[in-house]
Amino acid sequence: MINYKVNVAVQLLPLGTNEAYAKVDEAIALIEKSGIKYKVCPFETVLEGDYDEIMQLVKDIQLHCLANGVMDTICNLKIQMRAGADVTIADKMENYE
Image (cartoon, rainbow, N blue to C red; front, side):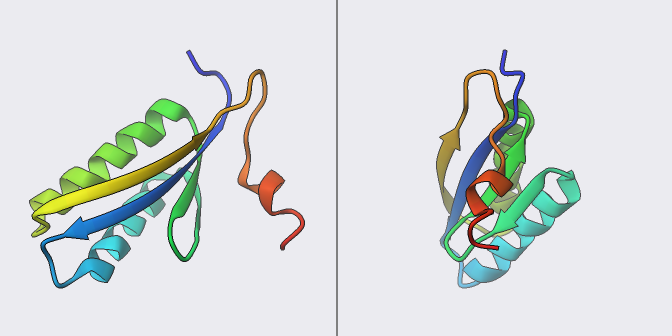
């Protein structure tokens, strides 16, 4: 069991639609609604929190796309975990904000 916060970078590529940016906006709205901490970046969105909750959210985003006009999704993930400690967005961004 993972007892510490992780970071997951999510890049959603909705295929088979002319509304790719709109579908990404819908995904970001689902992320915001989830209550999971996040930061939107130009090519991906970084999530911070419980591993299992984030993985469920990623699944929910893909299923939402498929149920709402997207024919196919590709979802690229980068996952950072640390032994015995949280991984935070702030740790990585403190020199840039």
